[in-house]
Image (cartoon, rainbow, N blue to C red; front, side, top):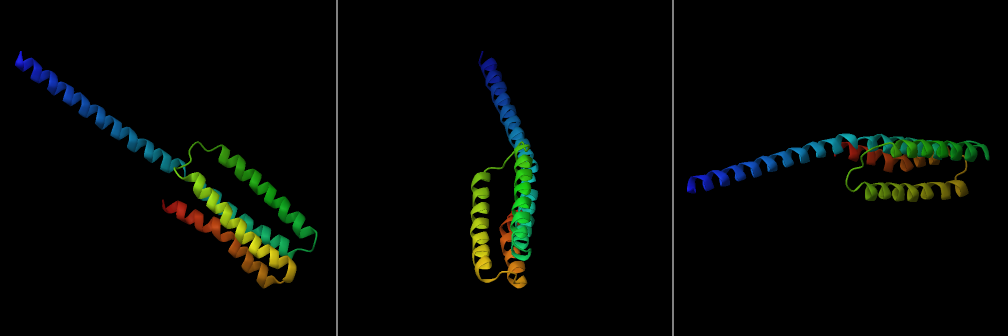
Length: 150
């Protein structure tokens, strides 16, 4: 009888080890899937960055009211496309909401910091608007770079 108890305990221990190994393998597989499937956000941020720079250039360098109309029309189309694209993605990594909110807040503050003085004091000043477009693009471009490194 003691031999049977030893075999039973041994097989239970073996079964638990196999279950733990299977769970660990599944966790690694899921982690890899999430990492690979969340790469879409890199492209999202890069497109967002380039598009925001183009909007600033359109608003600042094209004649009024065409610059505003072209810039805002383009921006609405880009945001609609990015929203549809992101809605089709099956995975968002942990912390995505906080990261995305910080991108939007940083972009909004820079956008206002460029547009407000630009429309008041620097209408048509190419140096201001090109520099401003680069600055407004930074949250998306830097965010895309950092996301790609994850």
